[in-house]
Length: 429
Image 1 (cartoon, rainbow, N blue to C red):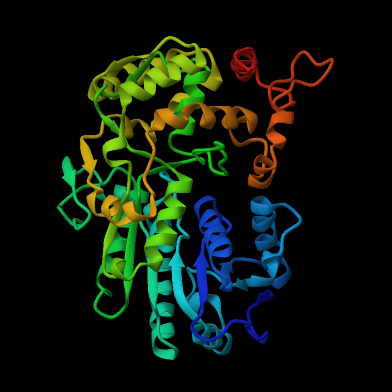
Image 2 (cartoon, rainbow, N blue to C red):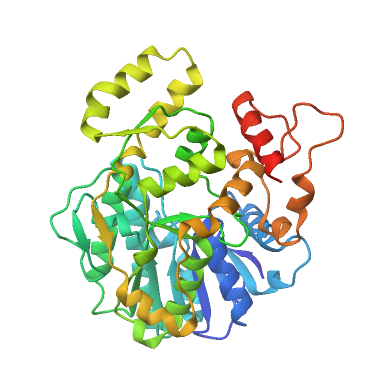
């Protein structure tokens, strides 16, 4: 279908196409794959680009990551050059109207997920970007009717709330740890204000990690950063409660749930926690999984307030290892998630998805696969496509290169700390 921001004619029947934002990102790619593999509908992908050619290249790159070079899906995917932060999604009036006449479903995945982004910039993407998507959905509604708008929020709109956070909850007077949580909360309030005008489904994933069957991921955030630091022996102590919940879900569960719930009539007007629910892990369990996998001593778990006020400054300022100091400073973004006291009730989600056989697996069932892929990809510094993993190419990459003493499981030069971890992994295999 190619790219368009103006005069090209869209190829889908009226009201049948899907508009997907965030399709070049980790979760968005997996959602795109579900629509391509499980329907025969066209999918328009809103993507930024200096020109149509760049937009087309970005979408082609996402498809290549998913399927490699040989696939037929390109004929059903249209790159729409635009920007969720600009009025009218950055589209001129005529092409925007033409697109709205052909789109019967909008899935809004695009977001900034940076914890340390300034609040105003986070609001520009997450709040104002969502406002622009809502405006486009209203245009679709007026032009040809809108079957569904699915908004991908986050379970962390709960912020610092303690106790049970139900799927119908939103504003419970909570405070927030960072700009990501606050801006996503504000965006969801915007969405909630349009429920009477639009057929909306809100989806709140918890911490998203790689595929449960392969470990593949294109995003090494949140859980991955502390795991890598743990593997390197960075942590002597952690500000954490052993019993604190760690709610982790694999991306295949999240994408499957988004797709199925977007198609169910009963999901209209509902909010769902795409969380682990009864399968939620704890800090103690994750520490034990990491200790066993990386053959490292478990760090001491101490009260968060004591770590923050006393131990962290001492560790940072007395460490002679610049890499360790940087890792400790970076880890401060994620440390608050080691002492949560909230449970994301996902009863409605579990009951709705049960007939389709979709449910989150316990982290322990696929933890080793997450780590194996993370080492293979050097914690995100080596790009390995989903297509390569699906073809089994990763098995070849796990073999160390002949004649090289400093090549790890990925066949590439490793940092000293990563090399030690890799050598232990090779023994396992």
